Length: 588
Ligand code: ADP
Ligand code: SF4
Ligand code: SF4
Image 1 (cartoon, rainbow, N blue to C red):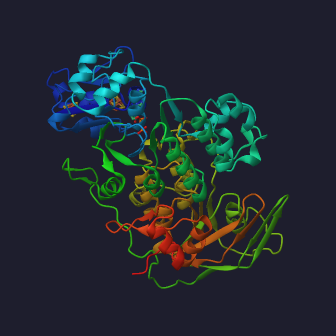
Image 2 (cartoon, rainbow, N blue to C red):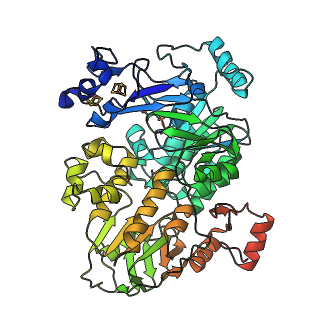
Image 3 (cartoon, protein in one colour):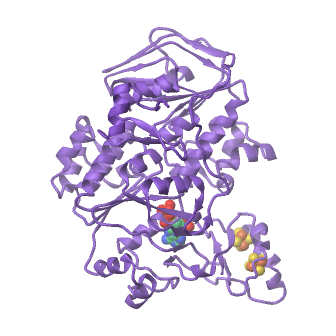
């Protein structure tokens, strides 16, 4: 069973003069294996005639063609967008009063699955002209499964409510103050309690245009929860939130599930673990095809995802497994001092920041953790020379490369030109060190205006790491990245720093990423928006204990993968760890 997918947005026949057609051996022999669509002028590949030689895949200068062999049992997709387009196989099964977590890369079909489950589109079983629900086909495809009953229920009308992924777009779509918006949308009478719980009381009278990312995220979540519906879908509810807020959101979602059906896509594994009852893994090739796994318990599901191998289905979907160190305190010798900074003080109107002094060493990565609005970005900006402290001047000849939390699209040109402007080149080394791990190849010729949030994040990380510098400062590099990309990013930063005379500071809220990336940690505390304190760089153990004590959550290590897992509040382990003061590590 062979499928041919063309990413039509990348296909530019005017530029390539149909290289795929020119070199296809079947076409050369006179077959109509690749023809030209008269309307769009783009190529069409006949999946019946194609012999899968892969020549067109290599010849296409824009990497637009994918030829993939799939097992015979995947003959009929649940949904296909069009000829030579993305297709989705099988569907996740939502259950009333449960939280279904979906794990998978971006572009693997999560939204497509939801559009089907919410009856926005009908399952077309590969016939993209089919626009109405064909009950016989539904019966044939889902016979005997719970999805059969689900589609029967769909006919009576199911209302789906969605919290979108890219919350930055919200101010363009709606207007008014936070309280005006919530007044308009609260059909369930829950917004007041949620405002308190998620802590946005201070911004009720603020216009939506003036909210920070974290505030917008919480508003979007409250709006979704206040609407009346049957099935609720939260696409990445944790971006821009600190850990404390993430866990509050997770608890609120769990409560919603007591009355409703909930589906969550989340790339923060600790949060996904904490909030889901069960998970489906979506695997395949982004933009080409996606397959939905059978449902699994949340622990097994996440471990299976890290392992890259689905035992039940005997499928390896990643060549390597992702492993965590048993102890996050990496035993490596301390490098030479790069920067010794004094205690820093910075006051804005209504906000005071005090930081301890500290030393940054070569080959060291420091994870910066703490609640939002306690001055993490300000601290990073002071080190970067973008803000000046009130009490001292940081004198340094050191070069600092900085990736801000909110990335501006203020470059007029292509990504290739942007990377070149900061020192990127066309060498194989640069390609394998930066371009490939960050999956930038296919957008190099795109204009920065036209790329998605996740792509912009990866470009910004590349811009930062490409620069020649002594200190690399990355503020929330995991926002909008999927799990795979997060892990690639953490590896990339480690590789860059570990064998160099440089150091990195990374502001991060994703516990799994912090755990994976950091040698030491600086912990922020204080009252958000009022005052903030920063510790000196601490060992992971000391830092995480200090931080998690503030948050009131304990973590244990999964015994198979060694990944951090949040303990359920008041569970036996939670109580035991709290009483011994070990919020993050368990003494053996
Ligand atoms: P996810 O939600 O997992 O990021 P989506 O379900 O949004 O993935 O999309 C999966 C793939 O389906 C996309 O990479 C894209 O190639 C394709 N796709 C999405 N929408 C359309 C559309 N309207 N027409 C054609 N292809 C589409
Ligand atoms: Fe032609 Fe080979 Fe491409 Fe198939 S894979 S369309 S046979 S070039
Ligand atoms: Fe050219 Fe590639 Fe499009 Fe074929 S698929 S027409 S080679 S851009």
